[in-house]
Amino acid sequence: MKTIAKFILHTLLGWKIIGNFPKDLKKYVIIAAPHTHWLDFPLGICVKYATGTPINYIGKASLFNPPFGFIFKNLGGTPVNRSESTNKVQAIVDVFNENEKFILSLSPEGTRKKIDPWKTGFYYIAKGANVPIVMATLDFGNKQVKISEPYSLTEDIGKDFEHFYSYYRGVKGKIPENFNL
Image 1 (cartoon, rainbow, N blue to C red):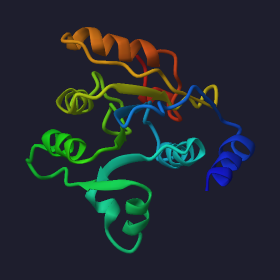
Image 2: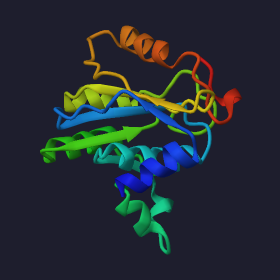
Image 3: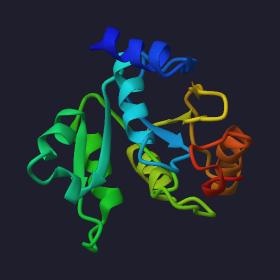
């Protein structure tokens, strides 16, 4: 699968990956941005397999319904019912705590539409699970996925978000008007 994913990503699509996901960390949150188009998902799946990283993700529950739901599950997905008023952050923190290894990728925007400021769920998941955050760009302007070193959260949410925003400034999503920092 790794060879096929690399062929699709690099040869057919012309994308490159700059940096690496940490191999020595068993648990962390990946924030992948910008998320402006449905093509971000297959791109992310190619990156997952091309790097050989066991990345998990969450998605709206309807994606996991028959007849194709099993595909999303087999690709590392977990359904989330966004209509319920449950504590989704704590539920995901519990998943981190219940597993020896768990890597979760999600969009800090939480949607493909323009969001300003970003949602904070990813931040509180990482904080609650006491895991670092790794940033990954989905830069359609340069056709590259740039992967950061792990970032350990501070006690200053403003400082942490400024660090995240500065990493993504200038990155172009598939639909550029849906993302600007």
